[in-house]
Length: 356
Image (cartoon, rainbow, N blue to C red; front, side):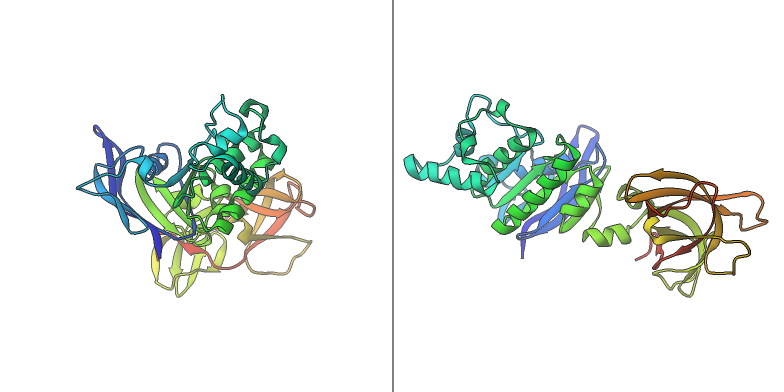
């Protein structure tokens, strides 16, 4: 069952297109991430769902209730949708407890008990109840904002880049905590972000926006492995894209003959591999012939447990002219040094772009 249904949502500001014909289904209890570069329309779409803006055309329904169509528009305060903005937007003149309890209909001891429960659910110590927002760290402020949104028992939770202002280590911990909390509560969630790694790790469903359009949606692993086009492939992570000739499930390209996930014959196609699908073997004197092709390591970017290498393939023509440069991920401890001669082979199948 789907909690949220968007049908052909479009929005224009004068001649400027913000959204065009966006349709998306969000399953009940799932975490959907809308990702895209700046100006892609992702925040505008989130504001449409929240009720802060209204589409020019299209319809939107939540748990079977129509919120927007050609005949009526339900205002934001009647939608029972939680919203956590990027900066948390806490009331500076209210304590933590007052921020969390804002809008609760209960009074007295019942209200205080509910506030205590909410603070505990987002891992805030009870002794922080009387602190002011400016006395909190960025992560603590975001947890207060989340508790305040959960207090309304929303039918849907919207998160607008809530982790972007946090330090890298804290961002990962907060993301895991929020994902676990919302999953345990069974709250359907939509997160908007421009951070690809955040999107891939948080989502059950990933929706990629570009130029106001929804270009692809599905399970994060499927989009990472099988993007529809080169732009989507490169947006979701590093990728090796090269021309190839496809014959009977094999690609003939600068890397040699490698298997692909498409069995159509095509004299001209683009294939994609992720850097982690490339494997390097150092060439010893008088090496035996093996699968793949020869290359030279021209650069290495060490980052601890991993190392990103740039390798230059031996030209497939005469072996003297410089060949194609590729990025390869290797173990940080055992990565070959710059100048090393290596054999490059592939793991798994290459993806043929533009093919299903």
